[in-house]
Length: 256
Image 1 (cartoon, rainbow, N blue to C red):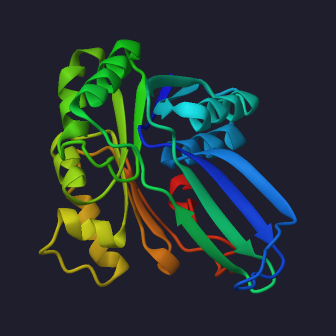
Image 2: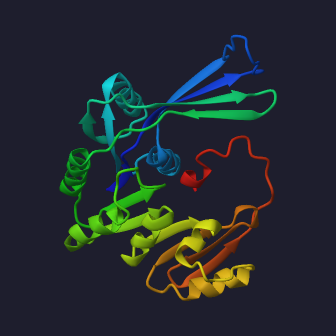
Image 3: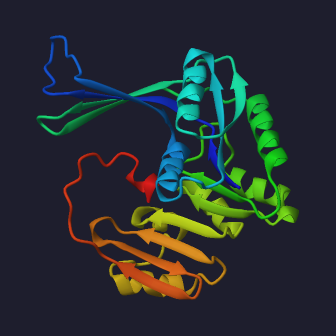
């Protein structure tokens, strides 16, 4: 089972507008609604590749928006393992001006995470893990989670041989790196969180860095328009695709 960690979900609403005009009613010609959050984006990518993939999303929901998010997830055949709270789940709107090809992301503040909520969420996650399951942390840790949260989870369940995949940044990345996860996926800027004294100007510099990471089986570094370099066990790859015009870059890192 693949366990996707998403404590801070959102009801995502994309409003398509032919021309966004200031000071007058703007009526979208289409509205799309999705369960949103970093790990939901990961789930969409996994479902696209393998509709039968066994996965679940661990999340925290509440109020009318939370129940609606649950309904939308069910429609998309996404299994949720939820921690329920009183606070209404946030809504995130993305206004898309289809004529100017401009987006306006409007994101509400997320849940006020208390120690009690975090403890319930954590214990629910641990209770549902089985030997050889996969745990995926995608994106920044939720405000209120300690920097060593990923490493602490790994310590608590080490006897179950759980595989950890990590895509995060800052101090949580540094702490997770120390715990030696199975996979790390970061971008070139986040690489400097781990190796602030390294000079990484060329692809060869990144390759030399990855050669020193034998303790991490899979290590992927995205390099923006320069492509991606990756260590896949004992093999190393550098991929550079042709340039494309991005319609909307939101969630592209999660999908990757």
